Picture 1 (tube, rainbow, N blue to C red):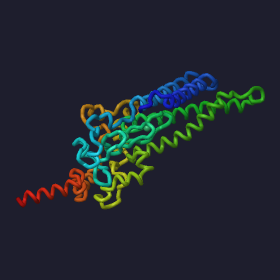
Picture 2 (picture 1 turned 90 degrees about the horizontal axis):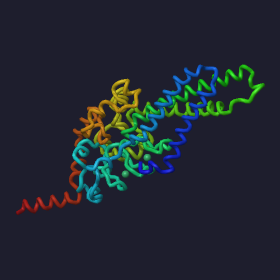
Picture 3 (picture 1 turned 60 degrees about the vertical axis):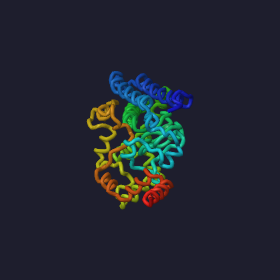
Picture 4 (picture 1 turned 45 degrees about the vertical axis):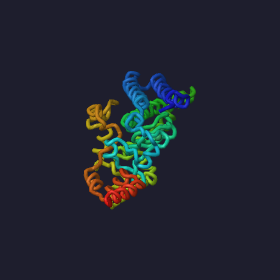
Amino acid sequence: MNDRLSLTSLFPRCLTTCLYIWTAYITLTRIHQIPRWFLALTIVPTLAVALYTYYKVIARGPGSPLDFPDLLVHDLKAAENGLELPPEYMSKRCLTLKHDGRFRVCQICHVWKPDRCHHCSSCDVCILKMDHHCPWFAECTGFKNQKFFIQFLMYTTLYAFLVLIYTYYELGTWFNSGSFNRELIDFHLLGVALLAVAVFISVLAFTCFSIYQVCKNQTTIEVHGMRRYRRDLEILNDSYGTNEHLENIFDLGSSMANWQDIMGTSWLEWILPIETFKYKKSKHTKDEKGLYFNVRPQVQDRLLSSRCLEDQLLRRVTPRPSLEADRASVEIIGAN
Ligand SMILES: [Zn+2]
Ligand SMILES: [Zn+2]
């Protein structure tokens, strides 16, 4: 996010945009077997939405805890020792803690890290509900732009599919008519056709994987970095008692509930690159900002009823060294 206008961020963005426009231009001008109006009617809107969602992912950004002044840590040492605490909305709803029961703090950004927040080494900033850093965007995907990223993948898959079938139809017709005996193949069209196959196969696979993740309500970091992530969940491990569903406490119970949680509740929100209605409704509250997440009632109940978690909560609100000192002072007061 810091390098939005640097060369390293401009290069992949310009390259991606140029590839889209070049493939559309070649498809519209070098194909003669399909009516041009039909090509334009299918290619142009798909290209427009794909490019719009591409830039929406960048413009919207993934969201950072640094956007919330009340999450800034004033004294890093005090925060590490449990003397400084995060705002109440976070301390009440936060589910992932450190080994010692303290809240997670970013040593680089000097900020409290909500659940699912991670520091991106490429952006050099903490990202809310970080999924991954995408080099094609030169941007992270996270809480705020996840929906647009999924839509970008879906529309890019559709765009690559359309270009693929049109170019192969044209090349197939040219080949079957025996034109290769009289003239050279159109290398621009061949290049676009080969690119379309490569993009279609790779993006389709990634789209399927991303939709699967949305339906599981699980980020790429949570899938691939589970071992490290599990360490953050130590307290949940203790309190949960069983490994059932432990690896994904943010799973709301069904694929549709998970999908709607990220993509919105209506099909219009799923296909149009607009903000979800629930985000608009909660614009003036702390809800739907990636600072805390809903979990299933069973998970919530078990967490709240757990004695172990209570102990951990006590540990995090009362620093261990001063706890002994407090006890000593209470004893002295009692003796007096
Ligand atoms: Zn950070
Ligand atoms: Zn990043």
